[in-house]
Length: 472
Image 1 (cartoon, rainbow, N blue to C red):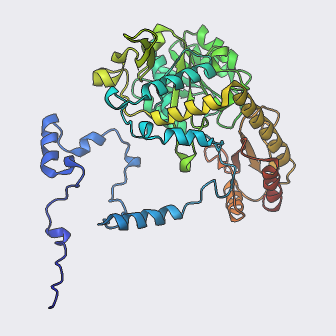
Image 2: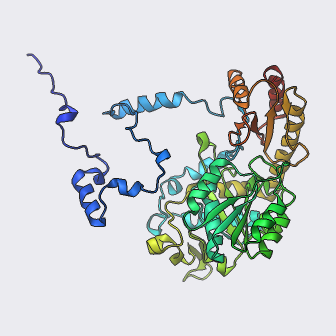
Image 3: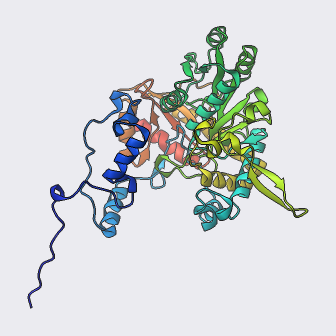
């Protein structure tokens, strides 16, 4: 017998308009009905706010569709194999995503099916997630010397934007002052998150990297500032001694004081609430969350138990409540009607899926570390950072800006020889080392290098010795 070859699929041009097999809304007739229902002429109406310079205006350069799972696995595996992770080479990258040690217990707990598959966390499939989030909030509150901490939002960038919008709602004012050295990506995200109700004004820092108190005072004189926003430490890791005075200036002008902080530093640095911050915010990635190729982020917002502030939290808050059984407690939402989960478009802000699994990871990490462990972590990072600054300052062709300041984890390095920071990074990569994050927002010869407790003195010595060969 002669087998008849199977006929292949019809050519694309002869097929009906494409509908994705797993996305019902991609069917043309469904799209049409949805647009008619809301009175939109087309999908383009939804993108009217996106600036023209951000639009591609051409189809994405994508490969042909893969028709089987086996093909997809092979293709994605090949793409991933092109990456080199920070676990494979010595890395000094930081600038917001840090290489801290993640205890094995953290991964063991968060990969349990009760947590890993509890997407929304409602009672019918919760299996203890509400309690786990309450425990996380309690541990974070102790670390931050605060009384109210939210369920994590997407990342520290969103947490900063949320904290500043909270300040705007509390004060009824529109302007926000960014007074610290802040990364360009974070500034861009916060500007976008605040508009159109609020305007972010960036107050340039002094030549030594610290906040310019006189410039801040001048901006506050107008009486229309909702919040003074400082970072502790700043983008370049600098710890500013002027942080308490910034809070005094803000409060004297009727503004709130918002401080973004690295939670891993709070075993050795004072929490923002101790020097006047009304709202603290930041990213919990340093607390037991893997770098994940630059991901693995989740944001926190923290305040004292002030009804005015608590009413402005747009995110979920879990509280402890007694049950009908004496001695037993339950865990549930506090003032759920504040959120967009309850009132949708009438919510304080639109808040979608929380990064709750990362919050559970941070809770496990904090419970393992305890106060003594967090202090030991902070002391180790401070000591390693100081040692790295000292070693690199002795390298010809390398200068350490603001060398007299206290830096935590991140610190700036300026290359004074013939190579830019990017060129130095390329030479380091050839030797199996990831250099620092180049400060493209400031000086192409400057980069932010990072050391944590995972770096040994030998690692730092190797970096210094290698830079001696390539930095001049």
